Length: 99
Length: 99
DNA sequence: AACCGTCCAGGGTACAAGCGC
DNA sequence: TGCGCTTGTACCCTGGACGGT
Image (cartoon, rainbow over all chains, first blue to last red; front, side):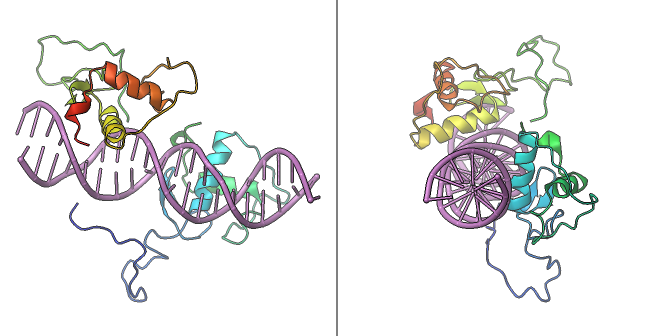
């Protein structure tokens, strides 16, 4: 590569063309700032870790409501079942996480 | 990381025509597909990089078991001590990797 | 062409802080 | 208060891409 990527340096993003929420866009699961692609989906570090732990330990969660909880940055820890469901539907791939 | 390794046994026949993607044979350390000779031994990119990093940074590893771990494509990352040991016994040469 | 070097996306581990019991 | 588990951040390691000689 020729030019280094300058991490953390942001310019006026108000008018930037691909001015997603941050350079990597938003987490497909919770909408937080994504830190890159993880297990097949652009996601934040929180969802990355949650998915890895859940898959690796074969966790089975239960939803206390109707399995349709809203998953965003603030509420993502309120329902593990729905968060993991959204991880899979967000194209996080089980096969890409070594158990 | 997608190649199937057949048995580590490669036909070194003379029927080199076109489907010869295995010209370099198997990695002497882990049996993965070798990409050429690196630091004195026919090896894959993974063992090439691992050896370079280990030698250059003078890494000292410890084996959690009996220093006789199986090193193959799947398990090579599970014991750095045994992987590096096998790099040396596989004739990777320290002198050929500038520190 | 063969081999050595760097770069870096993405997967890994470690651990402090937080939470429930 | 302690104990154990979970979360999310920080950082390390791996290995493929690719340039240089």
